[in-house]
Length: 440
Length: 156
Image (tube, rainbow over all chains, first blue to last red; front, side, top):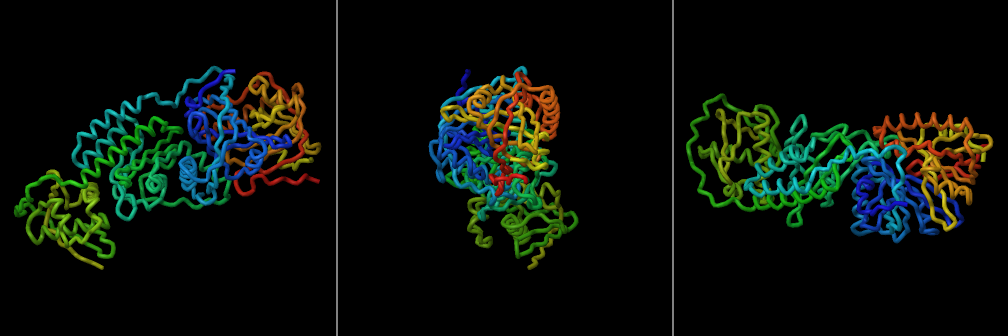
């Protein structure tokens, strides 16, 4: 009988291939069922979520011994674990981890309530046995042996070189897309209301810049709300599993974000600094098991570094000379019409929707200053200090707002563009005279 | 117990088959089945599995006969569990044919769900086949959800 340490079985706990649990009642009647979630607690404990199979629960109270069969998602190798029930937990880190994972995966298919977790059962692993393989052992095809932490260290070094928000975000996204080989990456930053806004992406047909996610919505929203990394390694399985529970799942919600319709794997990593969630890095793939534990570890480190760097950028504008008060002479193109709706600060330029909320207010403020004072260059500092903006929440996220605004204007190729000539500086570039109209 | 025709059909369709048993000390054991033949009227399920891959399961059944088997459809997780007493038999040609047909069908069904053939291959073996002849005493709905664990009434 060969044995393998639990520590080497990460790929068995990805939820890709269902695990199997056998128990026996005191009267000697076996029970056998599939399990939706098995979590590796530490080197010698696993936790099982068992929302539905009450026979298992009652058997375990009578006879604490159980057998667990887990499958390595990469090559199908089966491991048989003899386990012994230790305790149930309805709170604490392990419970929260399982509950969040379960909620996240089930909420994606509209099943959050049905899948509500009551408790997790923690078992001690008494022995591990690798089962023989009927054929020749298959090489672990899906496993990417790339040194994720090594890549992360190199990327971290490049991030540390950046002093402004935009190159900082670009460095991260480019690194994840190019070095890590992630097919789709999306970066969302938070606003004061808890919404997440897409600020940039890689790999999607449309960038999705400016798209919003409500608090707690989707895997990214849940990761932000729980300040926790969340991962789904086999979405098709979640979908199938959910359809078995309810005959008529909710109609698919349309989320105005870039999305991979046939994604198999997703990972969402919150950007946490100073105890606050600044945003989320989200990646998805058509491959099953696309994100390993190494990816989790690497992304967690990079996300924290990025969050801390964003905080630094947002809290210091640097020592700057005052903005130049040049008269604008370049605006000799056709006039450009800007419509500002006061109800939600949405802004339309030439009848094309640009942005709403705080970035919209900022744009209008900048344009009106330009018209009143005849200058095109501004500083972050004067925006922060401008009473006319009346924005208490702007302090923390000014750079993010400006970035969003700048990218939206650039993406739509509008006659009004925003540039950043230097740290803490903003330059409005207009093709012609701007006509501002305020509407309710 | 006599089995419903629909249930009998389901048990013989391309479904994943998992086997629970236990030894004299009450230690449970997991195994996987490799096809089944059902006599609905007699309430008997003849289950094939590889003694080479699942020696503990074979030993347990030979020792005490207690068995539980869950059949789950890969497409939608619809599942039923049967429980009863089993005896071990040497496979007859009809069993071997059933196992071969099952092997083809389940590989296709799992493949249709996007599970790569090399993974499937690690769970299915026709090496050293045996038959567990199960007299079904109980049957349950095992499909995940509110009805999971519901006992099926014996068919009149």
